[in-house]
Length: 229
Image: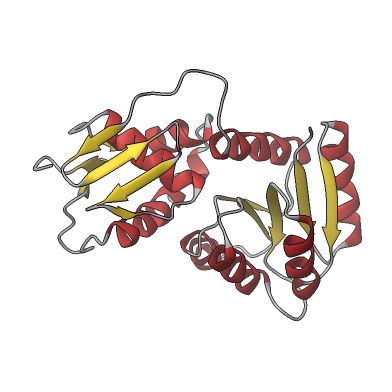
């Protein structure tokens, strides 16, 4: 059964272009041209992934992302014509899994959609055994994670990041290495997006950002799982 993609953009030509490439790649597509319609379509169609433009009329893309993330963990890839990093980081901090800046290569968008879907769905390869460190527990097969017995509501990217850290306790990962681990292809221009995902993961773990216990910053290098775990 093909994955269903909700494409949200107020530019009809972009929707038409993305739809064409997605359908040629075997996906089914539903559309929305504004924020309100996007929320209606998301609730009605229950897509496997949302391609979401930030510059929407009415309810803008950031608010749509905020509502979608409040209602569930459907993966989101943002499209933005804005050059400011602030908008991209805000979107990622709201829980988006990835972003692309317009104009974009539709083939790369399809590749990124495939990458996000791969890490949000159970694979056919054997999954690693349950992982733990201190109060952290992660079950790849059941796609569940807890801290101090409290269930963590993680996006696919956050889950993948936590799994990487738990599989390699004490190892320091650069941003580019983490991006490569969770997306399959490391795009240097996007490596700072890892910071937003780490910030979200820390918040869900209940970590103090100034003195994090779980995900620690190694300045000038990257991140690692806390040694005292």
